[in-house]
Image 1 (cartoon, helix red, strand yellow):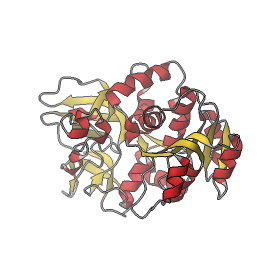
Image 2: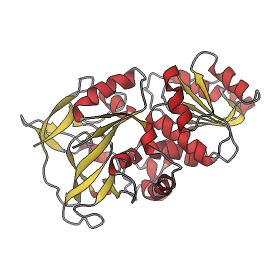
Image 3: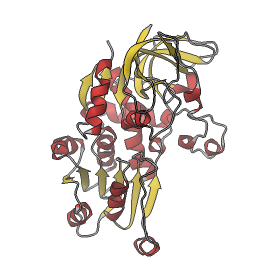
Image 4: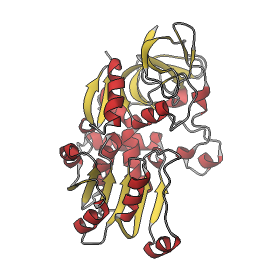
Length: 360
């Protein structure tokens, strides 16, 4: 028996309870968690914005130590430090054949598997494949990657989602060039990672936007040169900060129609807007045909930072070891498993950056 955070049904509160976790079968790995980040996507799973089979053990951003491996697993062994990859690519579908592994059509098939059982026998699914809100988890071998050397394992948990997403939004999706101007909408965990990535890319002016004035210090520490409290005049304020032109790149990390529209309006003619935030089907964004022609802007979605974790993790590790990327700066709260419901409430209230579950 281990303890885990279970979502019994969509819209229900999480239950911190004991579960029965099986030993790894062929092609599986058992991992003892060191830490797990509490991501807004977990909230989206709990409220039904994103659909996965329930009841489920949530949590998709984590790192830990291999306890045991099943038959056929050779790339990791007991005692190895690993980062969990919630969206493993199959390597065989059409997007994978094009090298677009972040769009793998089979990435989330594991979410339908039976992962564990509650003490009273209810079958549990593994959330977004990895069920990281638990003391231990059993995952497919494709869901574990060797943790980078020289990076504390608790910090490495953030590489599993927030950092890959923020880094990729800047370097893969928007492809920010040195000297360009950038606006980042939403200063949560992903937003803070995006700000750091923009700084590393050599952006000149970096504008952070959030509804909370209290996040300014966090944003500036991550690399923001300007801070704007979100309002109806946000786009106008950003244009004023960029010589009346607007930024070259806007990255939206919120997933709300009004924020996406404002990010678009904040870019210059010919600018690029990358949408990282996951919004609901009710969030409709509208444009008229004339403005699309006139402004010549680009609007792009961004899944998992358009990243290939196996390729990007070593790159990120070099930036961490060189002191250019500070994982600890993303974390505003270190909690236990029992603190996850409170972390969800803080996300709903727009408070803080990343909450990190630390396992004993």
